[in-house]
Image (tube, rainbow, N blue to C red):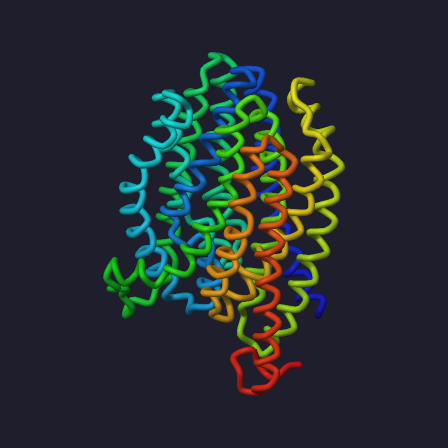
Length: 417
């Protein structure tokens, strides 16, 4: 790699890192602030709302959040705004359909918390209307920071201040929702101001458009099932341990968020069709596995100490729970790059759906069984098994695809060995 290429790589990676760093730091700070303001039980309820809303958000994003970045990176610049505009129309329609169902589900799970459930459903579905994946695919981290991250962070900060002053959780949700609305609105306007191919108009019928996303949404939907299921299972069968598992799950999620700059960089770097894609895929895969191992070890070792610190001594995540979640992160990191950067650029989106189905088929029954038995560590190990199954299947598919392309010099990957 030339000096200029290395400089561009570092600049793009550091740009994505700034956005993720802001979101992660704010999220970590919010834990003790909210716990002190509304109590650990109310914070655990908020964590439940956020986790379940993520599953509903999968139906709103409908696969664009998963494969949109790599797709944008691979299509002509002038056609990108039309691609985003059509996706936004579809996602807005899906938001209207998903919101009432999610609100009802949250009311049931929170045992009648009407305001928090309805407001939480409305607020936490909003980010899935955003353009963060679009800016990622463009490889323009500054846009992501200014037009998506900044409004979101601003709303959350105001929400934390308001909750600290009032002791009311709905205040946090209200301001966070306003931040999301600003991010979605500003991002959409910025995308539509981008240079466009005036002769290209996407007239794909909504039904056909959604059908084209079937493999992507199947992958994220099934993945979301076994990501959300542990929190729901612990809430249903081990409610007394729900706040502890919520802390473990939240720290695990923040580690995943911290990995996003790596994933975002590879999503915009790997798909470039210049004859060297096969080499970039190998580099990306090895980097993801290595980073996953290092980060997983940190999750296992640091979660007990960090949870005690953030909860002001009220909650400690035991090593018996943090260790399997650290192992799970190895699978998370690997699949994030192999699946959403490499396989998507190869057009193997169906393999994503199959891999997550394998993970769910193995992990979901174990999660429920271990929750019924009453073992939170076993639930965490079930999560680890699920994620490793997903990553293992995707690695197998990628390896086969690379061997096939090596045997065909005119393959889309190019003739590079």
